Image 1 (tube, one colour):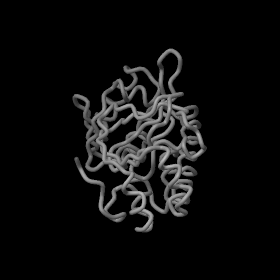
Image 2 (cartoon, one colour):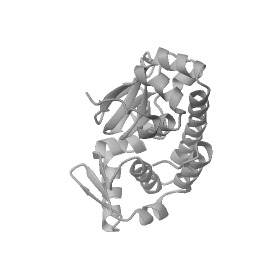
Image 3 (cartoon, helix red, strand yellow):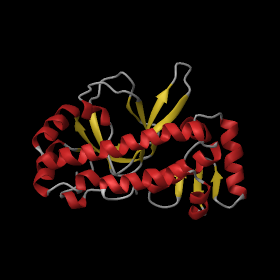
Length: 241
């Protein structure tokens, strides 16, 4: 079993690494290192929240799922934050379903111990509520984006948000999963990916996207990418990634 990082500064999660060392050491005995493979379901809508996750790597996707099974992503969480913010409102059940969209690792803590910790540790409490503010800004921007912007722009925005949260230039993603993230049918994703590949922005082959021209993707993405990134930088003191 991989050990929990010995010190706050050695931790790859922004919230935890920003804690005073005394607060991190008080929290550390309750933390457990857990791999989060792709498609791991962390939370299900209307099901009990048993743990809180602090991603060290990878990417967690918050999905709004309709009765017919259609889904669209409403929030993305990486090593800048925590899953799920529902516990910060006092909820014991998940509002939406959260899955690991890009494989990685997390530090996990039982929900009841996390709630007790934010009551006892002032800096942890401040940091997680700052993250909540940034996350809610992201969600509200996503609502506007899904309604107002073209699928190509949203595709570029989503690729950039994912790229910010991984090491290197490769993302392992299937077309089915991309379709869920964008709330469109799979053929639409195939067409967009082909156009982006022809434009030299990325290479897509057998479920792997390789970023070739990040600057070009930023020019193609809608304004929402820069807006969300700026909000995270302002609220958390660092941009995503």
